[in-house]
Every structure is written in C-alpha cells, then in structure tokens.
Length: 120
Image 1: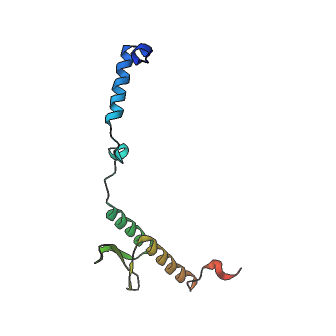
Image 2: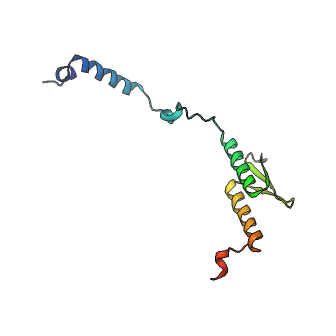
C-alpha cells in the first residue's frame, strides 16, 4: 500500500501540498534575501558614509574638526584638527575616541592618569 497525499488529505489538500512543495524546491537560498527587500524607511548608507557620520558625531562631541580621507593604501584615514591647531591621524573611530577621551581626561585631571589610579 502506497502513501498518497490525495488519499489521506483529499484533492484540494493535494494541490496545496504540491504547490507548497514546488515553491520550496524552486526557491534557491540567497544570502540576505530574507531581509534584502525590507523597507525600513531609511536611506541606504555605504560603510564609508556611516564612518563619516560616526567621525562627525565624535568631532562634535569633543569639539574638534575631523574629516575622513582615503590614504595612499586605499584605507580610510581620519584627520582630526584639535583646538590647539595640532592635526592627528587615526586609523579608526575607536582609536580616535580613546585618544580624544584621554585628552579630555588630561585637561580635567592635569595628567593622563585615570582618577581611579589615585590609590584611594
């Protein structure tokens, strides 16, 4: 005795099952397909644009001027002009943040030492 969708579920369910099975077998997996067409309402931003936006946010936070340029090796370089006119080049936003945060800490505490290193 052979198993049959039609025998156990009826003709309408057989057609539904066949359509579903056909859909599953024809739909090839494509990475990102599940979310590629989702409209979030936001404009697409390239990785370079995202980096520029993050750099500008940090520059505003630390009251410095900053820009992102492409170095001769093809990688982005962050140029920061400090309030004293000195220019510093950073490889990424994390490095930029750490240095600027340390600089602010030096202005507040008079040295690069953390207030937590005071030995209290």
